[in-house]
Length: 114
Image (cartoon, rainbow, N blue to C red):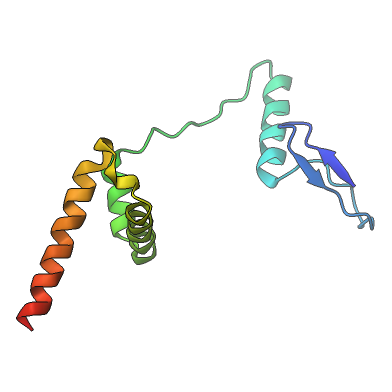
């Protein structure tokens, strides 16, 4: 059976075989917790406060990618795929295309030196 979460409206599946205890009401533990906080705040005459994290800077994202071999691999594959589809021909991507060309030339030069 599919129900909608009373807090966020997200649909979720409720098992057809009833389990012991209360039936599932929330789509996730996060919604259950936030709904509880909102009820408590409303009972106290206030409203719940949701913490919003400051936006992460581009440098922090770059560091996170460089710290992960898997993320680096995904970025390199995505760039190669865009290059193969000629999507780097757009002026917006010219600096990326130029750097890719420079790296390929350096790789070819290294092969000749061997």
